[in-house]
Image (cartoon, rainbow, N blue to C red):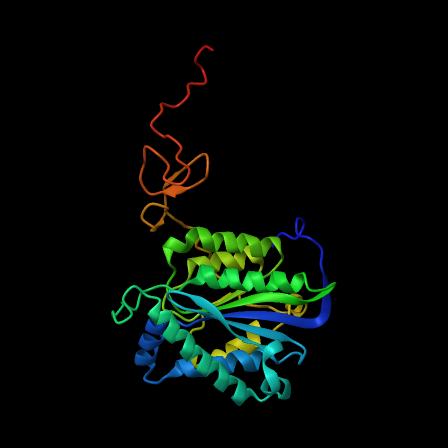
Length: 292
């Protein structure tokens, strides 16, 4: 994480602001429940809330649901009411599950064909939920002189959406500029190139648990540690990071491509004109040795 160019901020000691991006893609959870034989997805909000309160009761947790067509705030511990203040975890989780159901209903109606059955490989709106998290943190930054230590945790199960590449990378660089680590817990079958790059660039932790039955253990041991404590711990490090980009023309992940010299748009095939900025590629290259 490059902190040299980041603005200095005053943080409150031992107080964390954790923004959790929960993948609420119903197609992923349906396939996951079918594979495990139970409705395991209902246990994850309990695990999220339980581990977020482990270190300090002053910690703040915000939960953002990431759907297929939209994303939305569904919980804020600062506005949790009497249940959150008294530490009544079952009541809070019941409220979260109810809001998740309401969110899923609205998200389904936003689709082009709400009754259409979509393949399990459909991606969630990760770029939108990252933007919501960054906006919330920036609002906290501007609320006073001292702030809690912010970080983002992505609980992602859906595959990457190549069409979101530009928006996701913009969010990643914005988090890097504001010194906000992005932690990633990938619950899907495949690794996430987006989240590998997000955690690597922002100095966060990337982990793909081998067994989802022990999700709470992974969350409490790896992701519950505050930023100051992490310097004393040996946290998991990814074996490699997939830095491949997605082309702007077909939204596919590519190994080699063509880059516009003006706006840096990426294409998998040669084009006569940049579809992003309109630069003309049909002109012959300039001969630097030609007489002027």
